[in-house]
Length: 225
Image (cartoon, rainbow, N blue to C red; front, side, top):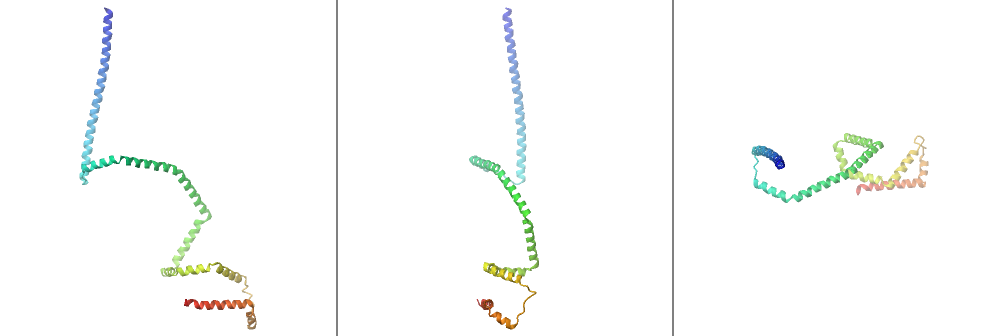
């Protein structure tokens, strides 16, 4: 008899423990439910306030919302989800490309810096600075009318420079300069008329006189062209 009573008491204790667990679980669920309800209420209040503020801002700025347009916009967004995905893939590819190109750009920048340093050491910058000073002196020395005249005759000037810089002309000019440089202008021999006439009979003088006469004849013909 005592054994049966003990078994019954054990079962009652187990039932009480289970009931306690159930009550504890129910209480936790009730607390969670109350928390969720409070959160929903707070979110609802915030949403209403945000919506009211947005409506007031739109009304203040004279903006009218067309819900039909918003709906169409939503449909377009949904239809172009794949396009947006492709755009994002493209951005990811560009980002990867920039990561790969970054070291190359860095190397190019370093090489460019070294090249600038090389130019500076060779004096290129000083040279261009002096060229700028030359241009400044030219601009300061010549009035606009003369510069305009220079512009009008630039073709003739370039043709003259081109002709002068031909190899035969440069060779002739260089020979003339070399001969003049080697002359002792302080010790020039004097020639009498008779001696001058005799010198004119030499082949060198005959060629020189022929050159001068031919040159002058052609020069006199040039304005007629």
